[in-house]
Amino acid sequence: MGYKRFTKLPLIIGIWCWVLGGLASAQAIADHKNRLFAYPRILEVRDGGAYRLIDYREGRDIDRRDEIPERRVKRAYVDFGARRATKKEGLDTPLGRLTYRHAGQLRGSRFLTIYIHGSGGDSRQGVNDFTFGGNFNRVKALMMKSGGAYIAPDAGAFSADDLARLQYLFVALSSASPTARIVVACGSAGAAMCYRLSQDEDLVPRIAGFVLLGSYPDAGYPSSAAGRARVPLVIAHGGSDNVYPVAQLEQFYTSLRSAGIPTQMVTFNSGTHGTPIRMIDWRETLNWMLTN
Image (cartoon, rainbow, N blue to C red; front, side, top):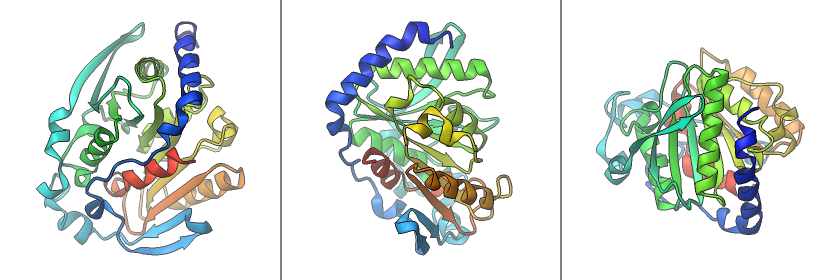
């Protein structure tokens, strides 16, 4: 891809910095409202804890958690410092300007968590402090407290140009934080970008893991650069998702484990398509990836 002519050097430098300083990046993510965001009762555990079925209930996990159901979470779930710290930026690339929103330090970060929205969305979804039970606010606060940064870019319609712009962003972030490990989370159809990024030979050594939130499987992942490097992957899915049936993701989970790829799956038993974004425990997920 053409962008690599200009970006391979900072990525190589970043990789060597990570090799020399990687122990620091494996330290735990700080606590933040752990009790409020912890998983409810676990109904089933298998594969030594790699697979968990969670007792999700709309009446408890939406109606009692939100001040206005699905639109505004109760104040206790929101860190207003993280809300105030959220900024909008733009990155000029040869393929046009990329808009992204972020919270935390972009230079000298220990960790970077990047969220890619689903179809029809944009960067605003990933920094909304009040929707999805305040879970985006929590991941921003976790990154800020842990010396990291959270970034939500515009991924457009997931075209080749959109992918190239994202790759330029990854290079810019890597140059500013050469020892940072990167976790990439993709919501719904945004998984298209996770899977394409998993094929990037230059980028994969910096990636600590991928998170699929209500997304679809890709049988080609095990043979991708990330699959061959055994980059950890977490699948979070609703048991009643009517967009991507949970059975397909369970088969995907089994195939990844059979291929030797560190994989976890969290299923919310009666959850629908957006439930994983609301319910995933970001601190637990990030800590697991950063220690694998």
